[in-house]
Image (cartoon, rainbow, N blue to C red; front, side, top):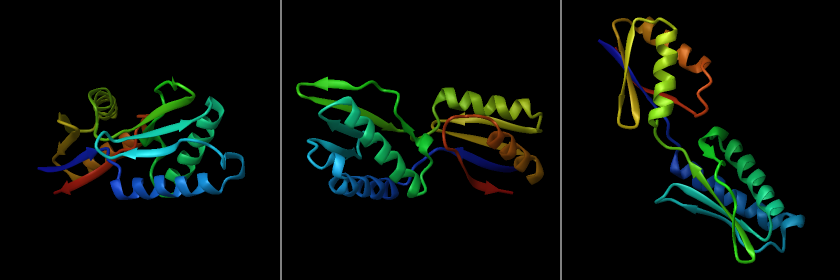
Length: 163
């Protein structure tokens, strides 16, 4: 029985490099030179905190961060910018979550995409990954193609291909 796993993960070292590069750019940008706050990576909670004096500068920090993330080879959809900005005294703070693992909602979308493709494989959720099994490698490759064509909204990797 052939199988592979669908996961969603971001290399922590690459993420740290992208954040550090964004911090360096923040120091050299003329329009943001006197900005208080900045960009901080929290490895434990897998979040990036953006702080500045106003919403416009926080938006500029978002753009810098996203540019650096993409240039490091990380998919931009790995970041969740949906959380609202929170005013904290004289500063504005925004927490950006780094998506790690396949949550149940994304898992359902992936499994539905595989079923809609009518490929003779079986997909099942296992914690934060999806295991896809089938009899032939061609069927597994067809399942991978179906998932890639579906609009999932999160970067996915296909690992542990076993025949």
